Amino acid sequence: QMLMRTPDRAGPLLDYTRAVMRGASAFTPAERELIFAYGSYLNSCRYCYGMHQVVAEALGIDSDLFGEIVEDIGTSRVDEKMKPVLRLVEKLTLTPNRVVQADADAIFAAGWDEDSYVDAVSVCALHNFMNRMVDGTGVMLDDDALHQGGLRIAKSNYDPPPAPPTDQ
Image (tube, rainbow, N blue to C red; front, side, top):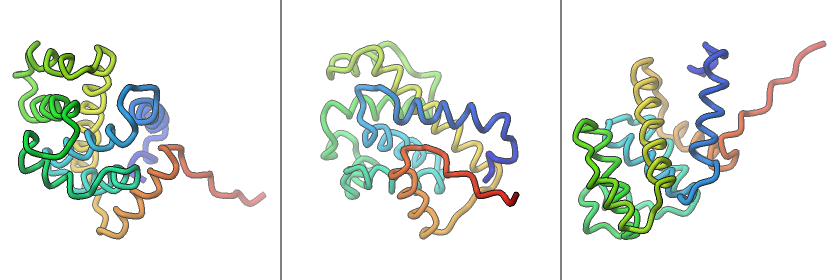
């Protein structure tokens, strides 16, 4: 609803969101949702964290994994290949000026390529943008509404809802 206040900006943003979150990538949609949710957690954005945690879980991410990652990425059960990606997301979210070549090299050493690195940065940039929009405009939903919204995103793959019928 917040984005519909500015339809000239909402369309391109929703197109970009679909491209980043569901377009071609070595990261699965579930992995991208995990990245988005984790970064939103780091930003204390309850809305985005809650919504994207539900999406990630609907796409197959174990719900217990979120608590493990927040506690310690290194000892979490997240796939070893994802650990340097999540560490980059943490650094890029909390201290972006401290990202160095070694952060990218860790991702490459885990088996990801340069396109994957850009994909991870893109998901991180998107969640940071959306977290600021949501928190800055005061968007809030109760837990049930967050859950339902997350399930809708998981089902729709970010496609917009159908337009309401018009009276003619």
